[in-house]
Every structure is written in structure tokens, then in C-alpha cells.
Amino acid sequence: MKKLYPRCHPYWKNEDGDTIKNNSVKGLAVSADDFLLPCCWLDMTDRDNEINGITYMRREHLKIENNDTIDDIVNSEEWKHFHRVLLEAPYDAPERCKTKCSKALPKGAGNEFR
Ligand code: SF4
Image 1 (tube, rainbow, N blue to C red):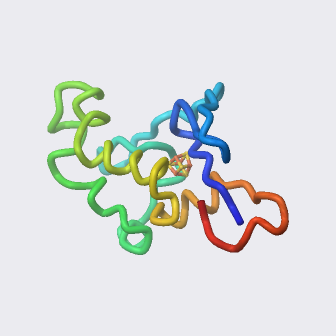
Image 2: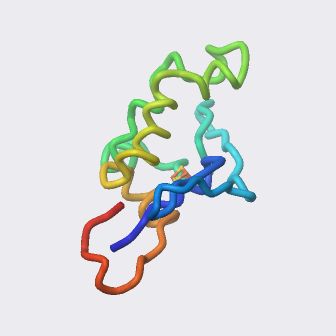
């Protein structure tokens, strides 16, 4: 079994449901086509965005030029949904996130993704 520890998020929940502070939050990134991204690892091709199920993060209204502040983007419904999935439904997280930000749990914990 693997567990997702999203490096872009300020805290995680451990196996017991306790909150763990992320003391090294990975920084935001900006794509060449003017989108703010949760991290540089999500700066992918359109095809990879489709495969990872995150084309919604590149909707036109989320372009930097279409917003007054960064907060307007990170507080958008799309970004809230993205972080909600990472924390509450990690099995539905983008494969890229599972690859970059997960840790294996001890043997015998099963095969599913948390
Ligand atoms: S790969 Fe995904 S989970 Fe990891 S820091 Fe980037 S956006 Fe967050």
C-alpha cells in the first residue's frame, strides 16, 4: 500500500488521522501558457493533463492574466477540488502526484492506494 503526502499542501493526515505539518511546502509554478500550477511537476503537455484528469486546472478563467490576484486562483473551486482529492480521495489523484508524492507503507498493509 502507498500513501499520498502531497508536497504542495501545508499539512497531511497520517494513518491514525493525526495532522502532520508539512514544513517544506513545494512552491507554486507558472506555465509558459500563463497558468498557475500547484507545482512544477504538473507543467505537462495537454495530452498528459488529459491522462492525469486535470484539464480542469487549465480552464480559461484560471489563466493568470484573467485574475487580479494569485489568491483568486488558489481559492477557485477547481483548486479547492484538486486539494480535496489529494487529501480526501487520494486514489483518484493524478498519477503524476501518486508517482511524485507518495510513500510505501509497511508490507502487509494491502495493495490499495491511500
Ligand atoms: S506532484 Fe501533485 S501532490 Fe505532488 S507537489 Fe505536485 S501537485 Fe502536489
